[in-house]
Length: 217
Image (cartoon, rainbow, N blue to C red; front, side, top):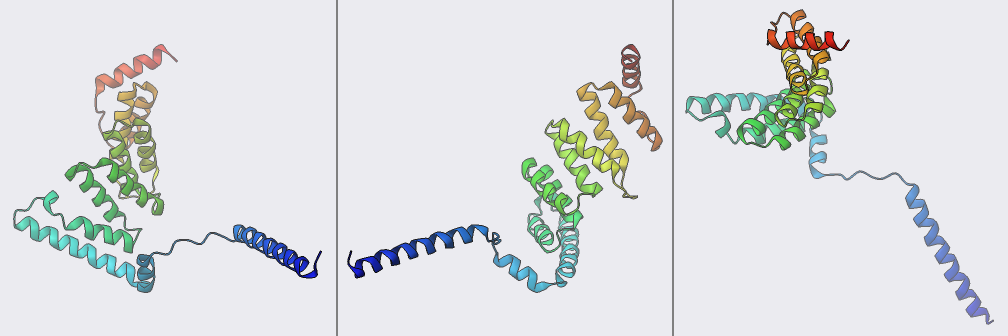
């Protein structure tokens, strides 16, 4: 074999090996996250993000009052949702903004699926929020998704928020018990309702559950 041809073959072999090693090395490198220009802008704001979010919340409240004075209904104030969404971008721990967006989407625009997406996004940042867990339970119940309704109602009730109206979460659980015909769950929920100072929603239903449980101990 001619020396020149041998050198060419060796060069091709080395190049091929080098390309293979480079591709294998690339597989070992961590995946780089996609950097959006929005993220860069928000990072530049630094700690000012929270302050700006509070300012926008004040702006939302002001616009709401002004529109009400003009006789514009709550769900006709379409400029509020973009502002509320901006608040969640600036401060993803701003529970009230997430909750308000979800309520408006469900009640005003008839978009429960999108409302659920918004609530679940908020729950990623604030999983112990009573408001967001309750809202998620309420939305699930509205779609007859009793499994998630019960799960998130329990999470809402279990939160340590002292200002939370936990009777609301118990009422969701009560409705789940009625719809699922779960006597044991219903009796347990009634006990918690009484412990929280609420009345028995339906004494006849409670009596029916007690008879069922007594008949099947």
